[in-house]
Length: 386
Ligand SMILES: *Cc1c(COP(=O)(O)O)cnc(C)c1O
Image 1 (cartoon, rainbow, N blue to C red):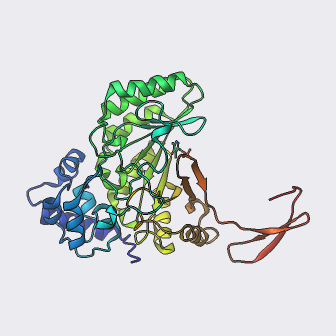
Image 2 (image 1 turned 90 degrees about the vertical axis):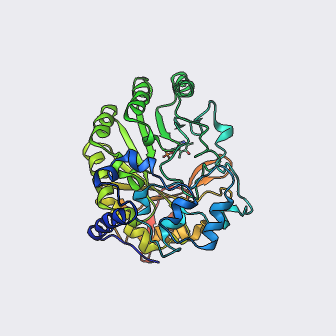
Image 3 (image 1 turned 120 degrees about the vertical axis):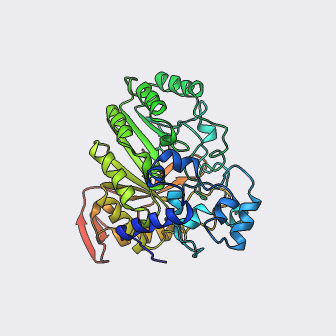
């Protein structure tokens, strides 16, 4: 299970073997074209079975699919998945199983209460000075645990300037908004031209001082990070990226190159990882991922407790698992490699940090702390409470 496949060179060779085996008529040039990757996504039973021997459970789940969240992932991402191992970590996040149709207690279609916090279509305004701008419902790959499975992939919220204009008007009118986070769906599935149109409109609003793009593309379709895209993006600084990473197997030479291009353009890169049972809920796997990201100049930003979206029970771990993982990192490796563990409070409460507590208690003016090794220390503190 601790298949931290980080030996990138052999992974790269595996990939061209994969292409020659399953896409014999496709040239390396086509394979490396993101539009080819997008057009040739694996989207149905036939596409899956051409590559993967499915289990009965997987096949039944694909046939039974109902609701908004389609199956879909790029041939590139498929090449990272084991064909014979149904327990392969990335496979579990991409190929559905029937547990997805079980609705458990506390689960919701809109776990973060985004819909009631949406003043205009596509905009979520939960916090005072920042907004989340969902620019499309389309993604290059559909994660089975997606918190927005109620809307992504439905093909109803296509990139549309008339809709975007409503969101832009709201941001222009609300001068307290100084930070706009573009997400979706994935903003990087837009063409360079459309994305630039949006970034330019936002950039010219005087009170918007900070732009971010939330994306999974560098992990699932790194071919998208072209020299042309990056040249355009760097005109809109300060622009940060939050990149969704799940497992060290994603840290391929292709992804390393994509991150290097972005970092070289001065774009600070942060990662977001969802803690997932049987996928990355082991300290060794998480450490390999966090340290691998640092090498690619990606700062681990958030480790998310998996949201209680309908059909996600098989992915969710207890909070104690996440705390143990943070404890296994803090003090034992580079501080930059330790993300903040976050729970997005159900119903729109916003993000709540779930950091393990290193404070043991208080004796008069003295605070008792325990370090990463478990030893106790005393600190004389001026305050009343901790
Ligand atoms: C996560 C989120 C943000 C960004 O939060 P940061 O903690 O600043 O990264 C903004 N708006 C909404 C609605 C969010 O869910």
